[in-house]
View 1 (cartoon, protein in one colour):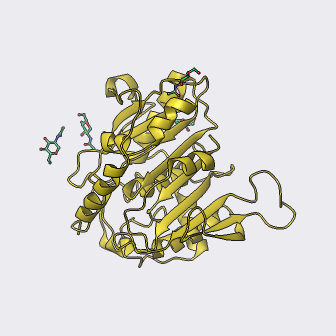
View 2: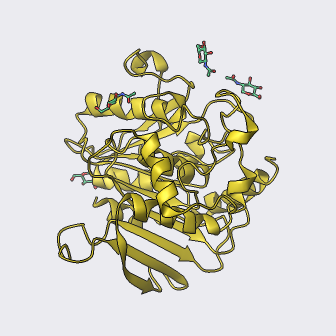
Length: 320
Ligand SMILES: *[C@@H]1O[C@H](CO)[C@@H](O)[C@H](O)[C@H]1NC(C)=O
Ligand SMILES: *[C@@H]1O[C@H](CO)[C@@H](O)[C@H](O)[C@H]1NC(C)=O
Ligand SMILES: *[C@@H]1O[C@H](CO)[C@@H](O)[C@H](O)[C@H]1NC(C)=O
Ligand SMILES: *[C@@H]1O[C@H](CO)[C@@H](O)[C@H](O)[C@H]1NC(C)=O
């Protein structure tokens, strides 16, 4: 079942070769004794690495960057320009490292990781965020998540399950939150469902209506009534690991959850051959800050699963 993932390693190592981080400082391991408590749990034993930039600002923003399958916190750190840019702009970065399972993917499938306050990798990551906000007096209104592949899948999950924690997310080659949950007909126990690999979802066959995705997401964060974080999803049209249909499922999910409509299609944006649909509130709300641009979906023509992230674009979307 997990064989196709080896392709991810190959793909991403090519990416790493072209993007070597020049961050000024080293990644810091925050030992679990420093941050894990009963009120700040880490039930799946994820590992917490933090990047503290050279010019940390007061009340800094936080970007959470979960790694891809078979990846690691240090590979994500050295593979992104975001840590280098943190030295300039002064934000903190959390690089979580997934529990020691054979494929080193994030658990985006179990009921615990997909339910607010119920455990799993998602809860451990939220505990890292909580600790960082306290320790560094970080700005709780500027907490962001971004990632590629399994990191993008976790970004979708974090925003769906913990909408009160994040202001925005950006998911490169991921799947809709909940898409990897095993079908109930498989009768998996909660622990069997941890890190379940859904071929159905990966191959673009987990198709739901917007209304169905909305109930899926609302069940992950029951009772949440606040403003949900804005989201930008990007996907290659030639992705054979997570088929491009997954972009359409993310579109149905987030446009329905955020209650936004298509306002504009930008051709050749953010680059030639890519096309971006911009969603917002139409009718009466036009021009109101942010309301017209709460969700974006980009199809990158001819791009495989090895989609190249653009750190400048990430910062622009997060307003940093
Ligand atoms: C996490 O680590 C603790 C302490 O070592 C251990 O008791 C527990 O079983 C681990 N949990 C998982 C899900 O591996
Ligand atoms: C940090 O700030 C100082 C003073 O503003 C500046 O000279 C330096 O270039 C900054 N460092 C980086 C890596 O941007
Ligand atoms: C992680 O898993 C590998 C392979 O399954 C094993 O060899 C290694 O000892 C494990 N490391 C820890 C810290 O559990
Ligand atoms: C982290 O902070 C949020 C927001 O204050 C809170 O809801 C949550 O219980 C805290 N801890 C965890 C692990 O989610």
